[in-house]
Amino acid sequence: MNNVSLSKSRYCRALQCNKMLWMDINKKEEAVDKASENVLENGIKVGELARNYFGKFVNIEYNKELSKMVYDTEEYIKLAPNIITEASFVYDNNFCSVDILKNDLDGIEIYEVKSSCDLKDIYIDDVSYQMYILKSLDYKIKKVNVMYLNNKYIRKGKLDLKQLFKIEDVTEIATSKQEEIKEKIKEIDEYMKTEEEPEEEISIKCFNPYPCAYFEHCTRNLPKKNVFSISKMSTNKKIELYNKGIYSYEDLLKEDLSWRYHQQVETDLNNETIIKKEEIREFMSKLTYPIYFLDFETYMTPIPEYDGTWPYEQIPFQYSLHYIEHENGELKHKEYLAQSGIDPRREITERLVEDIPKDVCVTAYNMSFEKTRIKELANLFEDLREHLLNIYDNIVDLMIPFSKRMYYTKDMQGSYSIKFVLPALFPNDPELNYHNLPVVHNGAEAMNIFANLGNYPKKEQEKIREGLLKYCKLDTYAMVKVWEKLKEVIK
Image (cartoon, rainbow, N blue to C red):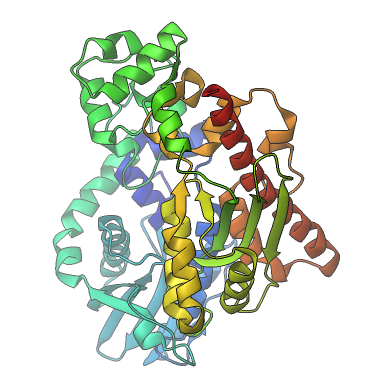
């Protein structure tokens, strides 16, 4: 019997990197958690919904005593034909729970459910491991499948599970992997006997298929600023340079790289600030009064909630709008935040066209996001289309001076995200520090907390709504401050 207890998730982690599993077991405290809580919640929601795909089912309830789950599964399998969810099996200390098991008199079909909209290799490895355990227990396997979301499905009326989910038959490739899995399990078992922390080369497996939570630990001996600190460089290129022994910023200066990468390195080493006044002045000439600063917040759900929506569609639920009507005018503010549990799209659109007049200058930071949302709303509401497209046509991207490196400092760390630009322009300003906000501190938090707002007690919902308003308001106030800074440097 194997010394290491494997599950399908443990097997897949070791498949990415043996050391990842070794660290999980021996040095978990070194992990810098990169897993999104929302991703885990989405997986649970999609998995629970998928159980209904084939109709009536029996679910094997989770039990810390895995043997109880295995026993219950064995009893229900005797009652074929039926559908069993979380059917659980163990072979030679290798355990798995099958998301959906179609149990017929002439054999078994395995369905692994994923909340993704595409089929990844790691999903096939996951379900192939399950096939290995069941085959080793002498079950007859008819089919092995991966079930995932169809992002072409647009909801109309009642949710149609047959349209929402796509099923990919991976029996052939899973069958071809059986001997490989057997050998990999032996390798894992041997590897885990190591008492001292093993060494592993930094490679693409540190990032693919998932970012490794131990990457910082494994690169702790590199210079603090190193090749992996370079912004906007592909992971493959970073690995290529690393393999050549190019680690430090000084090393990178000797390489034939894009001017952007060299600029990040040189400004950091020399503590330089780049300000191209004429280019900034030309950009600023496009920003005219009245000027509006717009920011949307959106949320996504894997399961479309409303008619006309699809899996992971960005649904705008909030915006903040600062505006100044004329030179030396007062800074004013408007905002909108939807109620939870309702389709917010019509109301947010009506409020937007009410709050932003036609033919005014609108700014957004990374405008492609706001413009895409506006175009989607224009396509949805024909009666408001003309006004929305007028707003769309008059948006100017406040990110341009930073993405084009008209204004750049070392503290921007090669990035032009406002979350890097703002503290670089206004260091130690508590008014502009997102960490000082009471509830919501970034867009991912805003998305996640609004999507689950209805699950909180009423009193707590009010605090969360207040936190959402403060967060989004800071986003557009930050844009105002950036605009003022740009005006200041070209005086």
